[in-house]
Length: 202
Image (cartoon, rainbow, N blue to C red; front, side, top):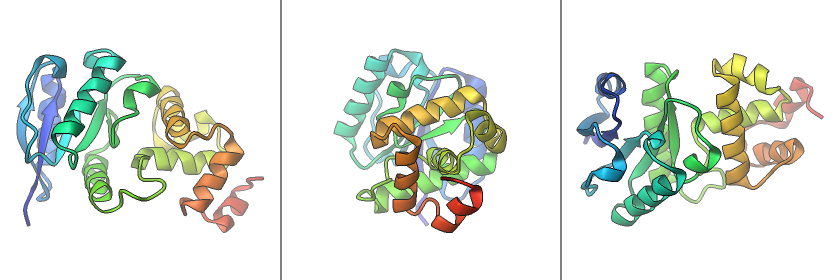
């Protein structure tokens, strides 16, 4: 099996080396290149790269949006995932395919890489293909009527991270109401009617 090639861009040696170690425990992936520089100041050859992991916090929203656009232009089949090491505004994450969070477990990191890259390759036309795996998890819990605090506790996240995910979900689906998001979750088979009824949703 051909390993998927990953490039990591982050100025933190701890994060980069930790990610590399975790990623390379899986036979599916290899870290081809590491850049410990700001993505806005380095020229990155992207041909042949399957997944790009980058920390958006290194520059502004507009600079990151331009960077993502340029990446898509050079390699439109590449998966771009953000490394969320701190609170990020929803606009910062709009163009990415998925998010790796600082509190993700090693198993979760590998799972996100696998799911996001497979989804991007084989399911681009799906209605919910723009939502990351964690965003789908948050959406399901929103549909079931949980508060931000309850979602944070259940997913072992901070409340601020949950709020960021909810903003991203709203931006990607263009749905602002909980009832609308619930219908979206039902229509996209993220939650079943029976699960919703059992959860006490209205």
